Image 1 (cartoon, one colour):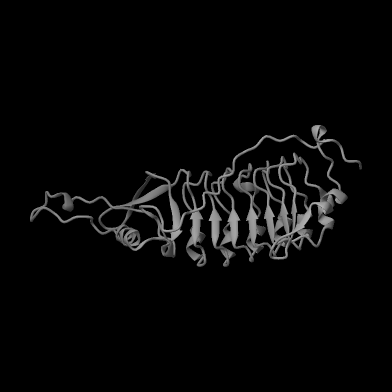
Image 2 (cartoon, rainbow, N blue to C red):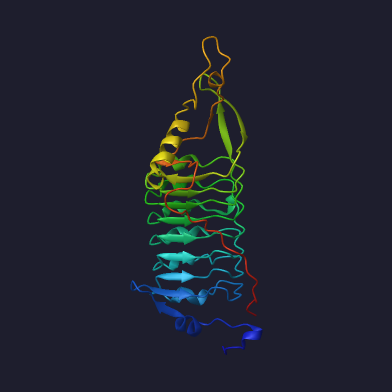
Length: 275
């Protein structure tokens, strides 16, 4: 098919795609088709079995092909800022993926297949800026996962399986309607109340010594000051515990972490669709 002028959009063919492949500094073959107004996933790309990295971000794609799993060579897939509402079951066949970016789409929890738990090579999974309020429990099998983006979603409670993902170093859950657990004097759960501020979990090693000590004191429920004497009445005798659920190796920092944290927020852009 002929190549049209830029004003009318570009028809993506296998020939055009091959010309767009570049070799990265570390020797990987990357295909970048970002911000091209693509509305339908080009099935011709599935023939490029030698591509290691695929960037289809900032397009208008609503659906991935059912046989996306045949793109077995991929280790890096970027689909952020599209219009995806669900993922096909076959995405679980991309077992070589180490990085998957699905942020800034229209994904709902029912649209995430349990096969995501088969992507055991994943180190980074970005699901931020969607409409998610839960995740498939099978994601708890992703032992190698180091970074998880859940920001700008609808989570009230964090997934329980975060406790067992031992290699997580960063979990971005900013701008979710999260709740904290309020406990009475005997440690019994009383109610769930709206979180007072955004939560951003980071690994303990990313905090300075002062911030780490402060977080540990709060996590253990230690009072911040001493009381006013026998019989009560001092400020230190009145202490309302508010504890956030504990996740292994992760704490909630009270000040800026030692290392700047990624926000992973992607701006939406205007597109000219391919006809």
